[in-house]
Length: 392
Image 1 (cartoon, rainbow, N blue to C red):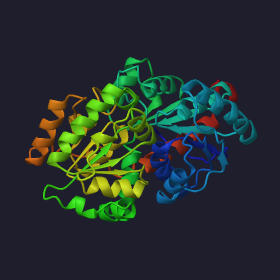
Image 2: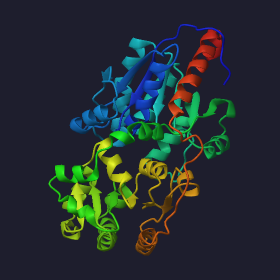
Image 3: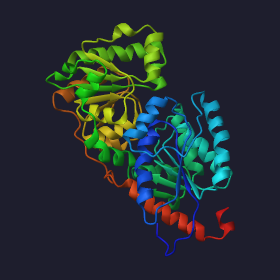
């Protein structure tokens, strides 16, 4: 986007975070906006969708995020109730601060809720991580992605295929800007601060000797309802992990939903404590250290697919689809679903040295946030120069 030759006064950019993945994406953007010349005025709003206060506080500390200017403290609820409550509490923030723009990231309920409020109040929206599609509308995140992109004004993409998705959905190419992946900005700026895996295990009373296997260790995260909410499905997944742990010790960072369901369905016996270390949800620096040192990662997380590709660590994704196809096409990621044979074959191939090598995709270079800040400033300047009627 071409710049303009003047600096029109603009109101603050309201930057919205709601759940854990948003924090990693927003941290480098805030730093880039502050470092931009001139600095871009901003206001950080935390919707409180991620309601574990201790974990939320630790993520802000790990990522060197400033404390939120406003916390809406929405908390947990059904998708409908949570989305509605974010909207109800966010509207007065728009009214009070008259922003030049609302910037949202990712695909959580807060992303869509704040976008809806802003657009209906006549405030433009910039969406970071636009155009990603799993083509699976049973995923709530897919609905959030589709709707946010339809009504947002400026769309920042992480990979070139995202533009094709947006064009198919009738979105003009002029609204789209390919900038790269801000998740990788966070990874690159924090890798030197990552906590050693042995220290993480020791802090939770797990013998670090578990990591001493000559083949290394694997990292596991599972949280998607399709994998953990049905007792038969969860039992089958745990059986596969039990089989894998006989080949390679596993560090399993348990999402609260997954832990609760293991207990509720009486599946504790399917965890072998000699080969599987169960940990609570981990901070960003702890998780980064665990992944960086792993022989492989088994996950259903979108963010971990990207991070393992950037780290060069083989990843087996326990899903039938992914909204991040570049991690499969160019990176270290392989989709294995819940097919026990595909999972064990994938593990065996990696342990035999035949896992995907992959490469780091285009513009995953640690400077995506700088490109966003530069484009955002230019775009806001151009909007400020337009007659009021042209904004309608």
